[in-house]
Amino acid sequence: MNKTQRLIQLMMAVNERMQFTTKEMADEFQVSERTMHRYLQELSELGMPLYTEFGPHGGYRLLKKRMLPPILFSEQEAVAMFFAFQSLQFYGALPFAAESTTALNKFYHYLPSDTKARIDALKDRVSFWTPTRTQSSPFLEQLLEAAIAEQPLHLTYSSKEGVTERVVQPVGIYSSNGFWYFPSFCFRKEAVLLFRADRILALENAETDHPCKSFQHYTLGDWLKAGQDMTPEASYLRLKVRLTPDGVRAYERSNGLDENLERKEDGSGLLITDIHPSNLHYFSKYYLSLGKEAVVEEPLEMVQWIREQIYAMQHAYGPNIT
Image (cartoon, rainbow, N blue to C red; front, side, top):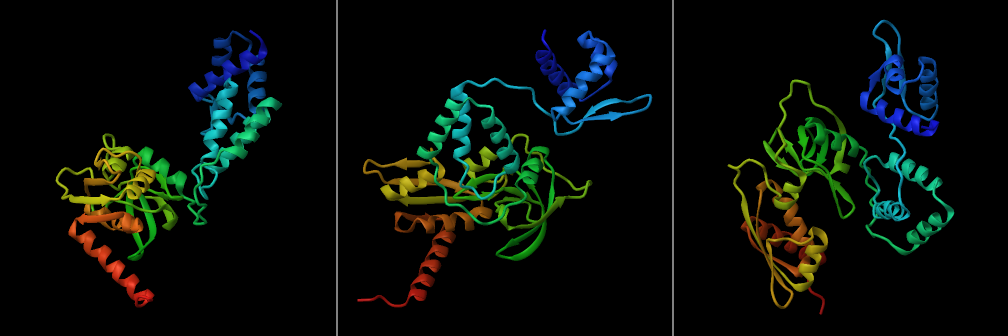
């Protein structure tokens, strides 16, 4: 086994163990402790975050930011990675944005010149256009980590109620029309509500003794599909919307194919589903944004709210011009 192969295997072993002594690694790789010291030093120089602990129980410890071993990619796989990154370039904020840029720059640097040329041509010919949003969303990584760890968060949040303090537990994060959203269980209102990441003014972990919710059997995909609370006793609202052919296309551009949408022969559609009352305002604004391409028939609360908005707009623009 040559030295490069040995270093790659050592990197994989270090990632798996996280904590070890020089003797343990020397015995495993059948080299002297002096040689293993040299290998570990070379890994450290390559950027692997190794920390040395002294004393009778000392040894090496790998810090949280681990370094992955080299991975071989085909040319098509390399192009696919840049293709995926291209689809995100218009977002003003991304989780792990700095790390994504660093990783892609490293990746690009070591590609053959002909592969680089192909990727450069791809960037000029393919685009996933999303209007760039200027709103800052600096807490995406914390929200994502909290969703994975089922960690409640204390938020200072700006909403239509003004600036409020609340404890929430994120289900996950998702983007829509250039904004980032995070459906979360709100402990104040005891329901899953929809929040927007750019409206967070401050964020920190809740107290260690604060209760938390188990989302083991309730995923972000479940919420996106139903927009509902996970509590079976929750009282849902029936949503019924008639869509023109253009309305159907607009709806599917935003939501994808929906089994609750019945398509007619002329291209129009009828959407019948259930929504949680906490999401009433969100969906009301969405269907109002579709204009004449969507006519809401139920629930009555949504119909009344949309009517009020249309009346207010008519009043703001004045009488008809003949």
